[in-house]
Length: 456
Image 1 (cartoon, rainbow, N blue to C red):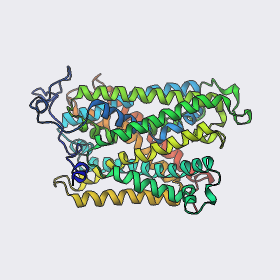
Image 2 (spheres, rainbow, N blue to C red):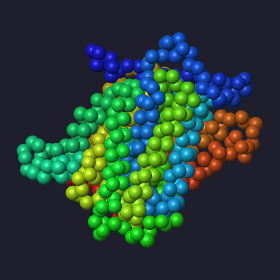
Image 3 (spheres, rainbow, N blue to C red):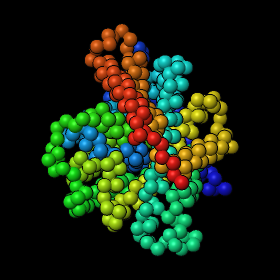
Image 4 (spheres, helix red, strand yellow):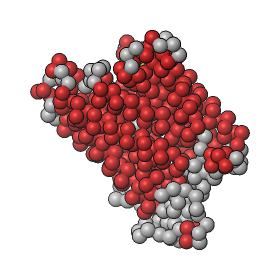
C-alpha cells in the first residue's frame, strides 16, 4: 500500500499555477524580483521537488535522441553557420520556454492547451493538443527504436558467444530487448503522476549523455583514416542544407511540451525560480550539444551520419559504452514523453473531472504499449515521423508561444512595437521553417530514401 500511495500521489501537472506574479489593474504583468509563495510560507506546500530536480528533468528532456544528430546538422549547415544556429536557437528556446509560463500567468491558465484555448478558442486547443501528442508519441517510438538499435549490438560486442546460448541469446534479440526495457523499466516509471519523481532517473540519463559526449570527444581523433572525412571541409562557412539543420536542431532543443509540468513540479513555483531552471538547463544542453557537434564534425566532415555513433567502428569499446549509455538514456527519457501524451488526453477530454486511477492506468498502458508496438515492427519510422516531429517541433517551440504572447500583450500597442516585435519575428520564423521542413519531408517521401524499413 505505501508503494501505491507513492506511485499515485498528487500530480504536479494538475496543481494550479500560483499567483506569484502580481498583475496590475489593466492586466499587464509585473515581472521583477522573485515573489513570495504564500502557501510555502504557511507551510502548506510540501509536495514537489527542488530546483535541482527540475533542472535534471528539463535538461534530460532537451538532451534526448536529437543530440546524436547535431553533428549531421553542422555538416548540413556548414561549420560556422551550424555553430551560430546552435547558439541562436538555444537562446530562442530558452526565451519561448519561459514565455509559455508567462502566457499561463497572463491568461490564468494551467496548461499549454488552456493557453491556446484562451487565445484562439477551440481551434487553438485542438491544434496544440495534436502537435503535443504527435511530438511526444513520435519521440516515444523513436526512443524504442534506438533501444533496439543500440543495446543488442552492445550485448553482442561484450559477449560474442551470447547468441549461441539458449535463453540468454534473447538479450541479443532486438524485439526482446525493446519489450523488456519498455515493460520492466519505462512502464513502472510512467505510472508516476508527479514528474519530479523522475528526477533521479533523469539524473542517471544525464550522466549517460555526458558519457556519450566524452566518448565521441576522446575516440573521434583515433578512428581509422578511411572512416574520417575530407579535412578540407572542416572549417566550412555555409553548407547546402541550412533549413534541414534548423529542423534537426529545433527537434533536439524542444522541451516546451514539458515546460508547465516541470514548472508545476517545483516546490515553490515562481517565475524567477523557473527562469533559473531554464537558464541552467539550456546552458548545460548547449555546452553538451556544441561539444559533441564540433568534436564529431571536425573528424568526419562530409561522412558525418545522422546517428554519429554509427560513424565509429563496431568493435570500439568506449563507443560501445556510449551506445549502452544512449540506450539507457532512451528508456529513462521515454516516461517524460508519456507524461505529455497522457496529460494532453486528460486536459482535452477530462479537464473538469477528478483523478481516476483506472483511467490513469488505462491511458498509460495504451500509450506506452502502442509506441512499443511501433518500435518492435519498424526500424525506420519513415517520412511520417519526420513530418510530425519536425513540424510539431517548430509549432510548439516557435509559433504557438510567440503567437499567444502577441495576443495576450496590450492590444493598444501596434504589432511593430518593441514589446511585440520579437513575438512577431519568432512566429514568422517558425512558420517559414515549418513550411520548408514540410516541403523537404514530402520531397524525401517521393524518393527511395523515404521508404519505410520493417524489421523482421
